[in-house]
Length: 79
Image 1 (cartoon, one colour):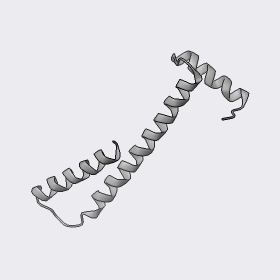
Image 2 (cartoon, rainbow, N blue to C red):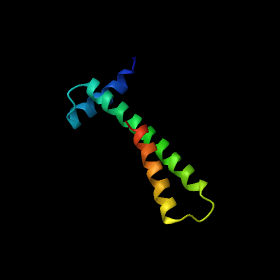
Image 3 (tube, one colour):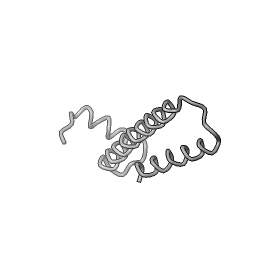
Image 4 (tube, rainbow, N blue to C red):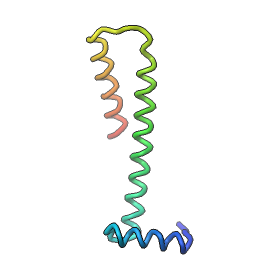
């Protein structure tokens, strides 16, 4: 991966200030953070879709069943 010297300097500064052991460790952490952010957005979109799908009143039992299904689905996505 090629990066501009100025940008590498910024990364080096962050690595030093935040106690990362290397640029590689910082880049891995940044990529993990971005992946987590993406997964969270997908989960939020999924929840919004499920939430919007209920147009009628449901019983407490139906609500609990739907809630369990939603959390099972989210658990599958985050494994």
